[in-house]
Image (cartoon, protein in one colour):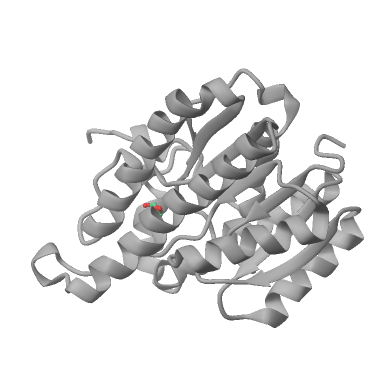
Length: 255
Ligand code: BGC
C-alpha cells in the first residue's frame, strides 16, 4: 500500500474525478477526508467505499470558495486523523457561454471555486505543514485547459491557467519546507462536469475523433497518477503538470 496511514484531504470528492481519487487512495491505505458541498449521501457512499477498500474516511461539508469553510475542513481533518499529508485540490466548476455573454456572476463563480479555493486550500495546507514541521504533497486537478484554449469557456481557461502558475510558484516557494506541488491536467474524462457533452452524440463523436487513444478517460486513469504524485516515489517531483488526456492536447491532423 503506497499511502499507508497517510491522511489526504480531497476537495469536491463526492463525485467525478475527486471521488475516483478518494476510492483509490482508500485502497492504498490512506485516511481520506471527503469534502463535499451539497450531497451528503454521495459523500457518505464514498466514505463507505474507502473503508471497504481498506482505508478510513470522514465526510466534511464545505464550500471551498470560502476561506472559513477551508479552515473548518482542515480543523475537521486534524481532529479526525491528527495531521494532513496530502491535499488534492480537485473541486472545480465550468460555465458555458460565448465570451461576450459571460456574466459577472458566472465569472466569479468559476474563479472563486477554481482559483480562490485552490489558492487558499493550498495556503492552509502550507501553514499546517510549516507549523508541524512535516513534509507534504499538494496536487491540483487543473485541466488540459491550463494550456489549451477552449472557446466558450474563457473564464474556465483563465482559471486553469491561474492554477498552472499557482503550482509553479508554490513549487519554488514551498520547496524549502519539503512541500511538493504538482498539477494533473485531465482531458475529457467521463464525469458529471461533462454531462452535456456525454448526452450529445454528435459532439461526443467529434471529440473522440480528436483523441488519439480513441476513448474518453475514466476517473481511474486520473487516480493512478494522483496516487503516484502523493506517494514517496514522487518525492523529487515538483512544479510539473501531468497530462492525462489520451493525447488530446497535441492532436493535429490534416486531411
Ligand atoms: C473540461 C471538459 C472538457 C475537457 C476536454 C475539461 O477540463 O472540464 O468540459 O470536455 O476538459 O476539453
